[in-house]
Image 1 (cartoon, rainbow, N blue to C red):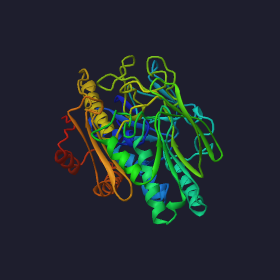
Image 2: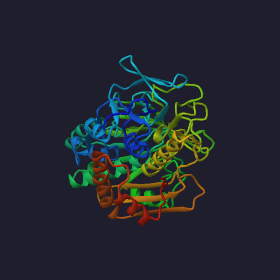
Image 3: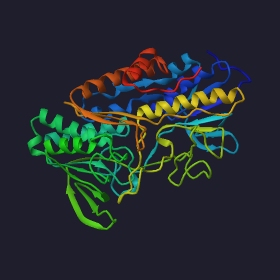
Image 4: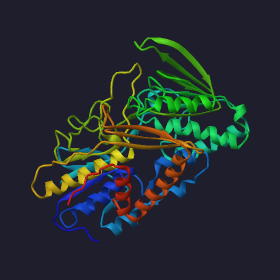
Length: 430
C-alpha cells in the first residue's frame, strides 16, 4: 500500500520489541488518516528475550531474526534503516545519519536504551565481560562459553549498578547452570551472582510475590553464591573488582572475583539521538512522559518501552532502575495508538497504559513467572510461581511473538483470548 499524499506524518523511532509492534498497531488504528514511517538503524528485528538461549547455543541467531522491509511494505508502513542521528523536537524533524531529515507531525520514540558499558572500566564486549543485551553480543558470548567448557573456570553473572533489567541476569545464570550440568562440567565451575539489588529477587520492583524466596532457593539449590548491594568498580582480564555496600551506603566489603566467563548487564541510558535535549529527557537521557505517554514539553512526541523515564520504587544503597516488561510495553503501544486516533480527530489524549508486568524467566529445566498489577507497588495483584511449565510457556511465547512480527500483526484474536484467560485487561479502542 502506498503512503497517502498530504496526510499527517507519524514517525516511529526504533524497530525493536516495542517499535515494531507500535508500527503495526498504529498503522491499523490510523489507516487512511495518517502515514506511518519507521526509522531504525538496521533492517532486521531480533527477538531479544531469546538472547540467553543464543548465548548457550540453544538457538542460532537467524532463528530469532525477522527481515523487516518486506513486512513493513506489505503493511503500508514506510521504513528506513539509515538510522537517526538527532531528534529536533522544536523543528518537528528527525535528522538521519546520512544528513537528510524526516519531518513529522507526531513522533513516537521507541529506541530502547544505549548500553552504558563504558561507565565501568573493563565492562562489556569491548572489555572483559559478555552481554546478552543484543543478539550479536549473545552470539559472541556463545563462543566464549564454548571456550569455558573446554577449560572450566569460575563464572560471574549479574547486573551492574544502575541496571534496570534483572530478570535476564537470573535467567542466564540458571541457564548456564543447566547447560553446564548437561555437559558434565558444572562441578568444575564455581558460580557467583552479583547484583545492585538490595536483596535477591528485588528485580527493580521491590519484589513481586515471593520472588525473594523463590530466587534465593534456586540459587542456593544450584550452589550459586551471591552478593547484593554490589557495585562493580572495574574489570580486568579474569578478575572483577567490586564493593559490597551497607544499607547506609558505606562499604561493607570488597571482593576480587576471579572468572573465566562473565556476563554482566549494564546500566541503561538514553540513545545519543535524544540524550541531553532539554524538556524531552531526564539527566540519564530517558524520555519524559505523562500518563498518556506524551511528552509534557513537546506534546506531539510520544514514547514507549525501555526509553521511558520511570523513577525507582525507592532509595537503595546502590542505584537500581525499574524494568519495562513486554506486557507493559504493549500496553503503552495500545495507549499511544488510541491517543493518536484521538489527536487526528481533533481531540485531547485520554487513554492511559495499564503498566502491569507479566514476566517469564526460563532456566532451561524450569523457571519463575510473576504478575504485578500494577508494576509499581502497592498492587492489586502480586503473584510469583515456579515450575517446568514456565520453560514451555517461554518457548511458546517466542514462537508466537516471532510469528506476530513476521505476519505484521498487532494483536491477533488468540492474544486477546490469552489475556482474557489470565484475567488481564488490555486497553481497547474503536
